[in-house]
Length: 262
Ligand code: DAK
Image (cartoon, rainbow, N blue to C red; front, side, top):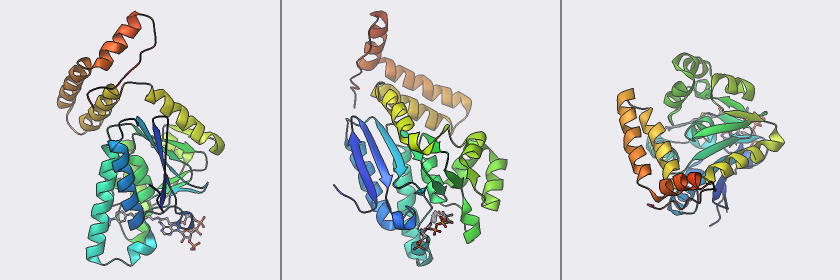
C-alpha cells in the first residue's frame, strides 16, 4: 500500500516508517495520522516483523510538531477528533508487541518529540533538536508529552523545558536521558539498523514480555511491577523459545527462535 505522508518499508523482519511531508518538516497532519494508523495496524498483524523503526524522511526533520496550519483552522469539534486520533495512534505505537526505535534525524519538536517518546528508545543524529514548544503557541503538549517527558527526565527538568519551550541539542538530550545514543548524521540509520538486527535475533515471546513488563511495571508500585515480571517470566519459561534458548546454550550452538504462541 502506498501513502502520501509516510513511507513504509519492510525488510528482513524490520519495518521502517518514515514521516514524509518535506514541505512542512514532516509535521503531523490529519492525513498523516490516518496513514500512520493504517501502517501500524499492518505491522501489528504481520507476524514476520520483529522491530519497527520510526524516522523522518529528508535530513532536516524527524517531525516538527503537529501541523500548525491545520491546528489553527480547527474548531472545537475538529480539534477534539484530531486529538483523539493522535492519542489513539500514539497509543497504538506504544503498545505494539514488538520493540520500536526512534531514529531522530533532525527536529523533534512538540508532537514530534511526543511521537519519539512513545518509542521504546531513541537514537539521535548530532543534528537533532528536541523540545516541547507548545507553550510558545499558548498550548501545552497534548499527546502525552507532559507525562512521558517527566518520566524520562524527572519532573523538574520536564517543567523547565515545558515552561520555557526551549530546545535541546542532541548532546543535551543525551545528558538528560531523552536519547540513548548520538551518532553522526550519516551513520544514524546504520547504528539504528545494527541494534534492530541484534534485537530481531531474539525470541519474539521474550521481547514482547520484556517490553510489556517494563511498560506496565513502570506505571505501578515496585511490588506490583515485580508481580508482573514474575507472571511474564513464567510465560516465557512456558514458551518453545525458552526451551530452544536454554538447550542451545547447553549444546553450545546459536538458538533459533521461532516465536510460537503468536
Ligand atoms: N506545522 C506546519 N508547518 C510547519 C511546521 C509545523 N509544525 N514546522 C515547520 N513548518 C513549515 C514552515 O511553515 C515552512 O513552510 P513554508 O513557509 O516553506 O511554506 C517549512 O515547514 C520550513 O520551515 P521553516 O522555514 O520555519 O524552517 P526553519 O529551518 O527556518 O525552522 C523550525 C525550522 C523547526 C525551527 C521551525 O519550522 C519551527 O519552529 N517550526 C514549528 C515548531 C513548532 O512549534 N511545532 C509545533 C509544536 S506544537 C493536540 C495535541 C498535540 C499537539 C496539538 C494538539 N491536541 C490534543 C489537540 C501538538 C502541538 C505541537 O506539536
